[in-house]
Structure formats: C-alpha cells, structure tokens
Amino acid sequence: MSYELDPLPYDYDALEPHISEQVLEWHHDTHHQGYVNGWNSAEETLEENRESHDFSSSAGAIRNVTHNSSGHILHDLFWQNMSPAGGDEPEGELADRIAEDFGSYDAWKGEFEAAASAASGWALLVYDTFSNQLRNVVVDKHDQGAIWGGHPILALDVWEHSYYHDYGPARGEFVDNFFEVVDWDEPSSRYEQAVELFE
Image (cartoon, rainbow, N blue to C red; front, side, top):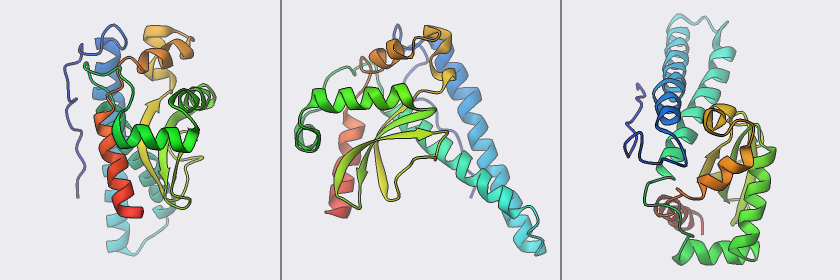
C-alpha cells in the first residue's frame, strides 16, 4: 500500500489571521509530505528485506514506519480539527463527557494548554480505551508519551514549524489562536466512534 497526502480541507488562506497562508503551505505541502514520503520509503525497505531475507536494515525501517506514520496520522487529524467556521466550544455528547471527565470545559482547556506548553511535539485529547475516559496527553516527537490504546480525539501540533513564522517564540499566543479555528465536528465524530467501539 502506498500512502498519499490528502489536500487540505480548506484553502491555504482560510485560517488567517490565526494561521497564515504561508505557514499552512509550508507545513502541509513540504513538512507533512515528508512524513508521507518517509513512511512509503520505510515500507518499501521492509518489503525488500522480507523478499531478500536480509533484515539488517529492518530495525531502522520499523522505527521509520513508527515515526513517519505517526507524523502523517497526527498531521492529518490536525488539519481536520480546524476550519474557518471553528472557534466555538464543543457541544453534545463530547461536551458532556469533557465536563464529566475533567470537571468543566475550562478545566479541560487549562490542562490541554498546559500540555501544549510542555510538549516537544503534540498536545492530544485522547479517549483512553483502558480506563474508558478522556485524557490529555503530552506527546514528544510523534509517539513518545502516547498511551497504548489512546484513540486521538483532538490534535494540536506545537513543533516550532507550526507557529514560529507567525508568532515567533510566543507559543501560548499560537495555542490561544488555535482555539479560534478549532472545529469540534471532527473531534465529536471521533469521540462517538471511540465510545461505540470501546464502551
């Protein structure tokens, strides 16, 4: 199977002024494409090694699959989490579950912002299938700190390439502006899928 980069679900300038057209173009077309290419290349190496029964480079290729697939999947989710119509708070079942598991939306948001300030990669809201609850996760790179069985609901990329051009070192300002474009339709759908599968 060969993996491909889907187009953004909106125009490059659709999230301005919160995220610039230039950042979306670089981030999506160059950076995200690099993870897709890396995943495909690693899979090709593994396939060649299986055919030749020479596994001397397989461990590195497996690591590359982990790194690049995680990068591709999380970036894909990141793009889908945002839209020009975003900026509201969650509603319905996801809003109720956030209040149940965190005490309130504001408590969840404060904790998520703390995760975003500490991460060397991603802040994620996940559905933890082991404890059947929502949980905020600090993920370094793309996979360090992830929870086994964690079903991603909301993803925020806080690598410097996602904000430095627009905000310089002011990561907190970028995080604030992320909430101006979060579209809770996709996270709500992912939450409902998780509940249907695991509860």
